[in-house]
Length: 527
Image 1 (cartoon, rainbow, N blue to C red):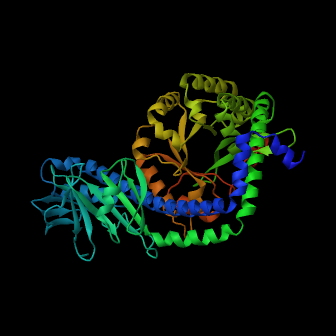
Image 2: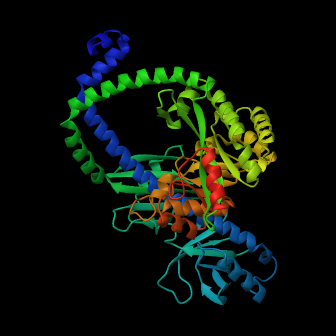
Image 3: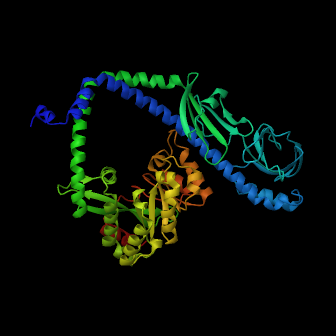
């Protein structure tokens, strides 16, 4: 059939759409350039606000923990030798606090460094959390260092952190304007790099984050989910315009070719999607789906302590279809329960020899939001499968995506049921969604899996290079384990181990493999 004959058989709306794509190639190319360059610019600004929010949240968590540790000093004189020793212990347990002390009538009477008698002045801001905050505080012999002091007004117990603690992640060679604005009786700048325009506050809407343009700057903003403050990050708009002009010149010259390519790609995609949907239904009834297993390594010892079970689809032609293609097709067309049940059946088929030889081995399974809809059913199926292969619930880890956490109310019932049965929970690809500490705190989970995109940034000049350390700090604050995905170099492994990450998986250690190869490799290693 010729291309013309094929077009005649298409539905009118589809033919019209494809004709528009071909007829307006230059406009499509310019629009693509505009959206791509602006979207990339917005993504960079959003990543900066998120880094600062994560950093500020981590400081706030350590301050609250510090005050909890100092609770015995709320009664009596905090400046006794025993009280100062407890302050010193609290300081040593934190990597973000600069000092711990006791303030009364605007004077620092003692701190972890011993008895003091230094004026701090009156606090400038009462946070919504009920703490007095002071900026520009100078202590001890380091008078050139400015601190922020947070004081519990009821007890006078005070924690100090460096003013730059939440902003030292900002590249100094880029024209960033970043500010942390505290919300209380009035809005107050808590930390600042570059200029802050007060008009930005009036551009914030009711959402959790967003963008706007003000006075020649693209401004990203994000509210903290656990603290009463907002972070703003701005870059000059001219930075984006240069990128847009360059992209427009490049794509405008090849607009017609791009339009033809997109039209042909659209036709192929529609045809392939329809074909794959029917073929996936047949695959679920046949033996085309199978599991491969990628080892999970304990970083301190190098032992293979577990594996992630990854579903694969090999068509009768030998073509491999990735889960990134067939899983969305299954979810969109009501086949997600069948896909999940097939996953459990394959687990039963493969793993009895594994647990017979390695009873402490862990296996991780990926579940979607759809899979958590009926906790009783999924728990019954998992228990039955575990019993058949001679495993216990403690051998199993269920991985859910970060986006599931956004609907914590619906997810918590299933997660709690799995936990009560003894099954561990991991948040997969953490850092790529939009969950926050407030969402995570509502759920019981055991591991954060750090997405490969953040692991790739280790040792690079990428704007995301600092996020991975903040994610590790967050996991430590929440008391969860960490698993790094996509580790490919020894330098990445050394960095992760040095930051306290417990587990990793990636091509540095092994690619995914059939169960027979996994058993052979485990026997060879003696793990």
